[in-house]
Every structure is written in C-alpha cells, then in structure tokens.
Image (tube, rainbow, N blue to C red; front, side, top):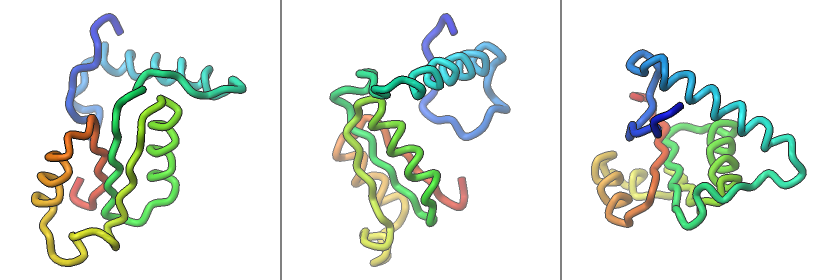
Length: 114
C-alpha cells in the first residue's frame, strides 16, 4: 500500500478500495513473518494505549486483540463489562465518552450491534 491506511474504523470490507484490501493483506503477510520469529515484538505502537472494550463474552477475539497490541508494543487496558459502570446502567455512549476523555490512542469495541 503506497498510502497509509487513514480510516478510523474497519467494520467490513465493502467500502474498502482494492488498494486498501491489498495493503491489509500485505501487512498481514509481514506480520505472519514476524510471528514466526523468536522475538515477536515490534515497536510500531510503542507509547500508545489501546483499550479493549468487549460487551460480549469472547476469549479468542479479546485475547487476539490484546496479544496483537502487545506485540506491537502498545500498552493495553482490557475492560470487563461485568465490572464496569455499564452493569449499573451507564449507556454505551456515556461509556465511550468517558473512555475517550482518557485520551487512548485506540478503542477496540465488540458489541452485538456492530
């Protein structure tokens, strides 16, 4: 991919250009090579914070996102909905606004409506 990926979200591939899809696949291939090395960490997200917010039970997906962020050298925060204010009635919007106020670099959300 000649141009950097500039989208703020990735919910599917329907709206991606062929160039963006090829860029994602090329990047995935590069990371597959990295995952075969003895040391799997790269400094891509060093100094960045990623919050994982999962509204549904998910061991594989949550762990995949956490491990990917850590292998990119990001600091990760995993929020369990059962122990968050959502369990006391806080809305999804309020939760998102509160997390955004903490200025993370990335928020990963898994929700049934997505």
